[in-house]
Length: 120
Image 1: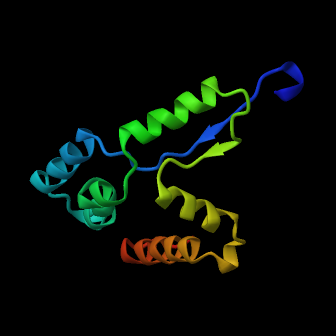
Image 2: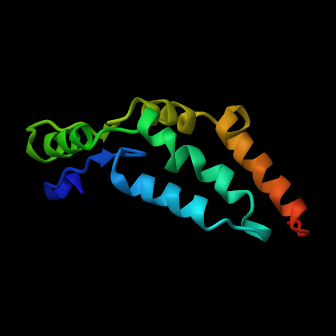
């Protein structure tokens, strides 16, 4: 897009501290899931409960990154309002065999596929 005079910035806020996280957390606790979705509650807990309050970016920080990307003469290519997302960026740049996050996700998916009785 640059040859057309359009610059693009990627903003990766990750989890942002808003009231919607608490609502999701409350909904998960009041509507217990079973069967195939039984493990989903534990998986979503860090992303919907206290994890967001502890590690999420504030709306002000995220808004400041968006404003900088729009208004700056020299915007950054990528913004990470939350330090957790910056660490995620480092993991994302790692090749899959070395990336502990991707390995754990793959192990989780394999474990779940075996638990529900299907394999790839």
